[in-house]
Length: 235
Image (cartoon, rainbow, N blue to C red; front, side, top):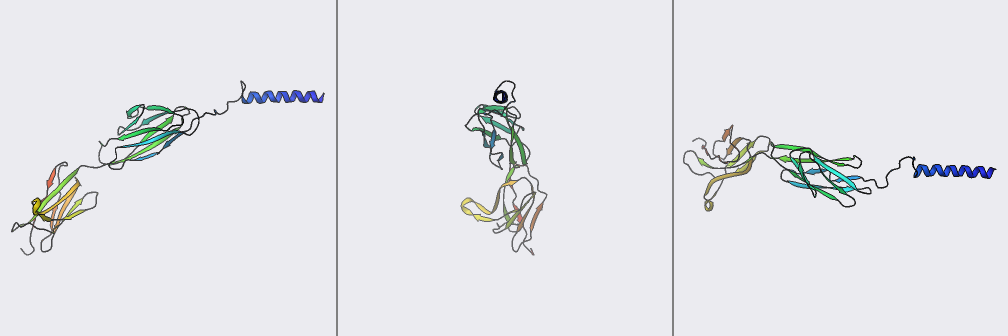
């Protein structure tokens, strides 16, 4: 009797185990082929000059990972093998064991300054989301500043004059005048790629009064001749 009762109990237990693991009505178990979203790198630093960088999408789990990419800014376009899109129109794809590459293109059509934007990468299978941060800097317009320095009485060109530009939100720049007859340059100075925020130009030379010109205003995108004259001390 005891042996028969034990057999019944063991049979019932086996049936319960089967229902829990595989049979209809049992609890849902984790899918052994669950995809896991992995994105790298998660920060793209374009700096002042880079226009195109990329990140990879990988499946660290099993099965097929279906993904979507959505940029959040009009400054950013995302491209992959499935297409290219700006703003928040998604591009999509799928990956198993390979790495899908997404190319990010930055446009610099806004005001000068540092910018930070974001790209959402989502796994449509389970709702996981990774965020890629995009950093870049838009430089302001620049000028070519040049000129000649002369004696205000004799008109002679002056070499070795220290010329200083004071620029808003930037360190001062300085150079010295020189003469190069082969290039037809006399008492000449120049500065390249100068932001259009010059506040003051100064000139210094032994035996001469300091030269100072304030409140400089110049339209960007033009060559800028800032030639000046210096007065000899005691003259």
